Amino acid sequence: MQYINRSYRRTDTWWDSRYNPKLCKRITCWPVSVTSNSTRAAMVDDPAHYRWSSYRNNALVETDPRLTCHPLYQSLASSDNRALFRTEPDQIAVDDIRLALNQNQPVGNERFLARIERMTGIRREAGRAAGHGWSRVLKVPQWRELGL
Image 1 (cartoon, one colour):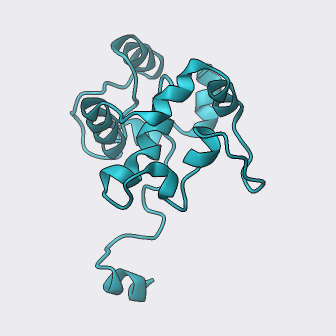
Image 2: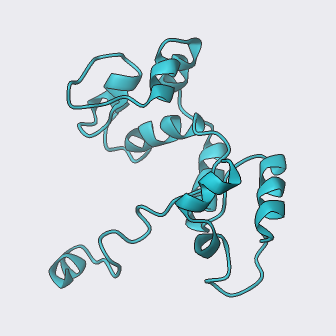
């Protein structure tokens, strides 16, 4: 671990913040944002050229036996929503998603966020020190209890 941290100038663990669960209203906006990360980072000029992307399978319907499609993706592939993957996402939406994820905040419209605040009794606005907010209270098993 120390070798990796020194070599790549990292200070955290390998998995730091990578698999933290997040609350979001709709998952349909996420594939577009994730798929276009490689083009926004100028790693490739087309998301289909990024080796580790499932873009070809999800947007271009090129089957890959190594991938198991999520039912939501399959329903998108059979509708006009497939066009979402062919366009760049709105930069403001991408920035909002990133900010919310970096702050361990739920993502959604005001009605959804107000509902989560009422159900949990936790405000989204900054207030108490770290450890008293969403990341500590809302874990994946509790989402099911909330009906989300």
